[in-house]
Image (cartoon, rainbow, N blue to C red; front, side, top):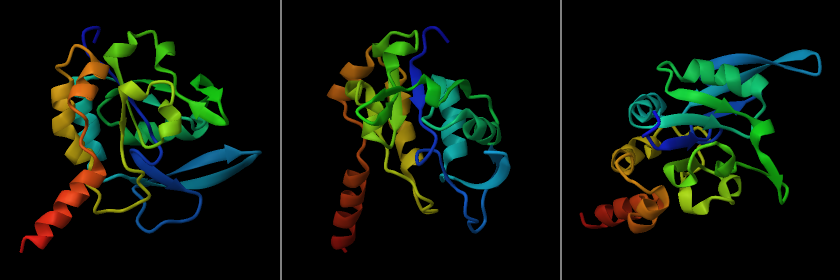
Length: 190
């Protein structure tokens, strides 16, 4: 693991979407105790989350880093990570509270920052490490989403890089908006 790049992966709206209200066909539900009462949380897995985590675990030292509380995020991760891809889990208390946001500071991981990449839907979460970030589209339950699948070929190349920030600068990650734009252009060709 020491020679692998550390991939810091967000949970909510990146890998899953969760709701206290019942959702149609949840992938799983967990009970979360809040102020003495257990509440059901219904969880939808983002399309291709399984394939993404499995492959990421083969390529990177994967760390789940979420601004959520452990009492929610830990059981969700237990359901989600069947392969043990996520070697470490960091929760809200590991975040830095900065400018009214929970920020994930890669310099606190005990890894060379230039050997770390963060995959997150929220720019506020990685504001201290923008040069190491891959932003994914916020996922709120769209079952036709392909963001994680589309990102994998890029991640396979990034895994070979010496410097994350240099690679991201020289080879910008695929943008969801560009993928959609290309799809629209393709439709107009017909």
